[in-house]
Image 1 (cartoon, rainbow, N blue to C red):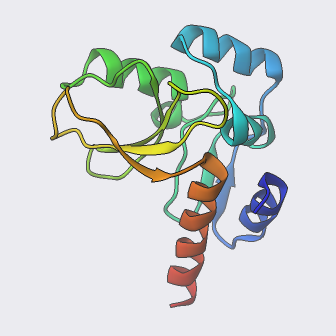
Image 2 (image 1 turned 135 degrees about the horizontal axis):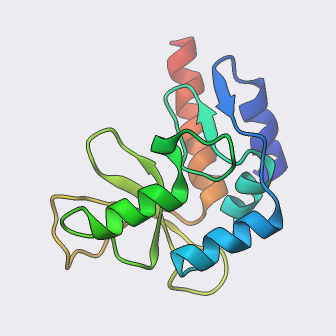
Length: 152
């Protein structure tokens, strides 16, 4: 699935909430504040939507209209500095699972970063479990699960 196909699927969802999208300048500024690059499918998500999601999916993001609890920069800072164990700098949080764990992009490699699961109970030395090879694949699976739950 391409990002554009995913975006259309999300926009057609009966229960959706998105921001207005952000500029390259805003993304670059956030990248600088976070000390890591925002790339690939997630960067496309930020450009188009800024923040938000469908159904129970609420993704962290950017923009003047982002709710404080979904602010990528604020939540990342909090997870790195105030939580124990602190979130490693190479992980970019995408979404909280509702229990304090995070789905994150692992920005250590080159190219499209994989999505990993950071378990806040597993300690600082954990190697987060990869759950998808990239952001678009991960979000497409989550949106499909939301759709099935809605029809169920």
